[in-house]
Length: 315
Image (tube, rainbow, N blue to C red; front, side, top):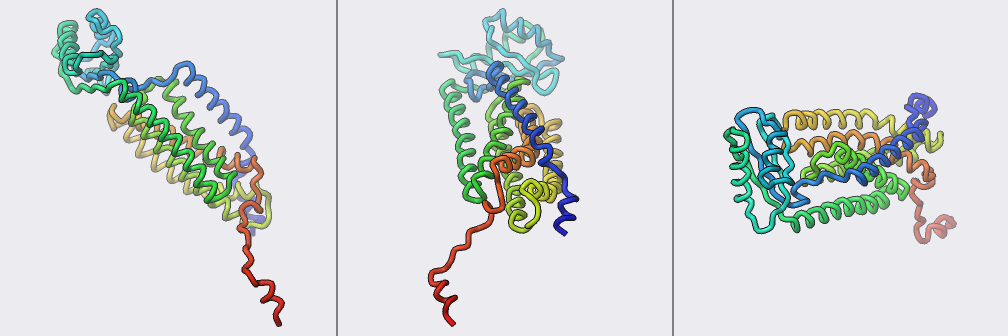
């Protein structure tokens, strides 16, 4: 029965070298983009003023940028926000000037320069010191999560699974950051929260796979480590597929219908769920196999009770 089961499994590990090369190339591309393009940090991290305005007709971004530039706001970043009539303007921090005063000045400049009635939707201000503190705390949050996961998986399963899990999570986070760097999408606190959620989702998927691998290593006597890992991945494939598809459907709804406020959040989770599912199969398991995981590593040690030898010798 076990030999028949081996023949029906999907040979995932046969493609692990190709998958690892593909992953390394994507990680290298992400690192290169982060080094060259860096991340497009939002006001949560950089500090400054964000102003959202609404126009009566479709906004001409080129004209708005020209108007802002000629009126002393050369550093203004002008973008559409949700529709052709909604515009977001980001300004660097100005010392000694209140956000409300800046908002009134921008509103007056836009009305005079475009000849349209402009409606102030919202205005936000974040200090530079607060932005630096949020960036530092966000980085520490991700680092702490990865360290805690490494310790937990090492105690819960085996150190080879722990290294595979942490590398898989690092892989998922790096690819997500790489996407935001390549596309220059705004990276704010909601995106940071999405990345932490990706860590949790990917870890959950990896734990399920690792638990099945450990169980099959103890149950199946025939077959090598690669065959047993293939069996385990095949057994959990339907669960992984259903979970991923249902999650992606919800995230797709948020991405297309959720509005601009959570667009970055949904984008990070969409990519994170996809690469998290991939990494639990081809990154975490492949690394554990490459490190030489075997049946002996996962079989619990039998602890002999004190006095057991003497009891066995008694008639």
